[in-house]
Length: 536
Image (tube, rainbow, N blue to C red; front, side):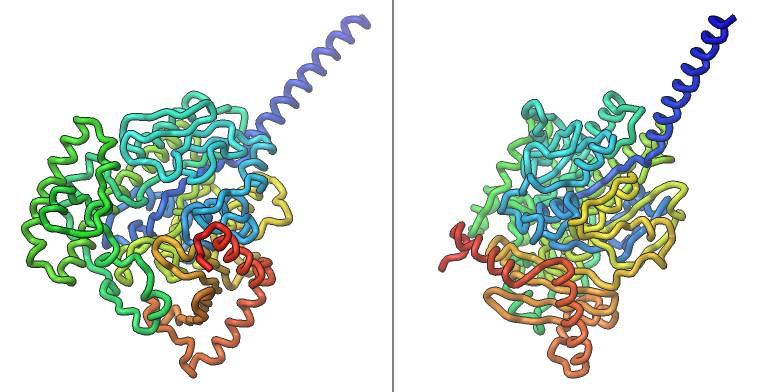
């Protein structure tokens, strides 16, 4: 009888132990999954959830319809690699060390993927990181080297490099879905970084979008012919004007033969980019772009600055928005896959860009400035059963906040040196727990490409104060409500004297909070001198 009793006790213990283990796995699996989708240089103006005048993006919009659209999301430093470093580390550029696209990323930085991986998350990254060949904290990665290519791109993996035939946006999605299908551990929560190259310069669409977008005409921005009258020493010298600095071949796909025919100087060829096309792909390309070349050759002799500017703008928009069409399609592919495979219900999905971008506003392309179009970035988040669908959030948030948000969602304590704030109160509708009233910005890459001067500043919902320094000492103030296009610097307007004084106090408080100093400015300038970028 004793033996029988012991037997049943043993069986009972095994059942309890087994149930306990199963319960642990179920509890572990209930941690929210995270899918972080980021494009490169995707202007909020080119997402129809924000503005439908340029393009319709139903799949990206779907994230907002099922979740939350942020209308005051900004970056801390509007340039590719530094933005990514801020996102990974949760620290401003002056602390993580990645101030520009030139300096290497300090791999001693602790990143949120490392912390999630340590906490039991399965992690993967596919697409464009921009820096580093072996990103820390990932169970699997396949990333583009540097900027990468649109056609038949090369990828870096943990085991070696490989080239994949096809269009980069489609391929990155294929990689993510293949990982879901074949290597996802169903007993672990996951964090996927799904990172598109598009729509980064040189804006090369998928073949299926050539004909449609090259035949479109787009509305002109209000400030296309901005004369920078109140910003002569700051905005004026920037080298990103469509007329003066956008290149006819490299950017707008004119051939070398047309350049020679028209005797166009300062030529930078697109040949090395389209040289990646195989014969079949090149035939499809030539069928659409050769007639554009022929038409331009006929028009060019009669063009003046105004008509050439408009022509460049339209060509720019055709290719830029053509690349976004493929991004939207592929975001839809991933969202559909998640819905069809029961992955959506417990997954937080983020769509953002590494910064904003100028789509002809102020006559510009590119980014870098603290002015609105490059400072503001798209941010759409869905989290079923947490975020109320169709919510719009106007609070000031930054890419600085992603790391702490993801860590809190995963139940992981963020390191004390992270500087952002978790967005979870806003996601849960608990706005009373959010007390930020302004954000900080600092840009360093000067002298360099596009000649945007070093500057730092503070923005709240009402005003923006910017200090340009190094080879100038200029202050600018913008009334964001009265002057949303930021064409009138009112810093020296007596009516704004009290606002200037108040914003300067807030700026100094914020610099102290984030541990940014003039001494650090001097240190980073000296770094440029040591590298010979600045000639003494």
